[in-house]
Length: 340
Image (cartoon, rainbow, N blue to C red; front, side, top):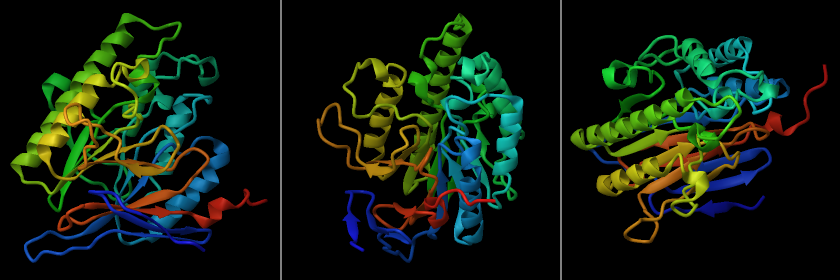
């Protein structure tokens, strides 16, 4: 087995990767005036199809057995893009996610509402599916899912953005966390046959709400002298694409806000998303003015789709890096589906 070591400027990851073993460790600087270190689990783009349910069960069992895990974050896409967006699907996912013993925080993905107009998804109206998603998977504003729940700040309590119950925020050990509804399919701008002005208006409202939530999150982080900020959303917004690219159209304003807020914050910022089904930890943002990497912005993309594993994120407020990422390869999911 050959150890692989990767280091990033403001979020360090050291990994030993192999079948049966997968250990990553980050820096552990301590300060007598600091705050306590803690860990959480990160998943996304799962479960994609009924054939993957047994793999999700293995992930849930492994996370539940790990007493260090404080909560579970899901970066969206709770089904694939070619299966029904039925009421039964939403209820099934709720029941599966409720198997998590720790608080469970979800941000919506495009597969569960924006793409539901497709014939193989049931030819639903996306906005109607978004209403159903909120009804089933966000049943109590300001409360997470999971057998143990977590009280969350929610944008639903802001009269200007009251529909966005899914935009949530919380702080732990002087580190700020927020979930923001930003989805694939060009942030729901992708055309479809039954698209209406109401669909366009929803995009405008949701982008405005996301911008407001991001601005408020960084303002609170600065006011409370937070050690770091983590933002979770579903879409890969195309950080690497040139500004003005067609595939960045739905994300341009948000990317500009993320750049400005991150540069001004000066401390570690983790940008968590799924969508591409490609686990990575990197530095995706180039400064508009500096023309170089924004060192304190680190992207964490989850495992997903066929790769049903999870990430352990260790948060150490006393470390210069704050966030470190551990790949958790579920050995049982490397095998073929067990025969009955």
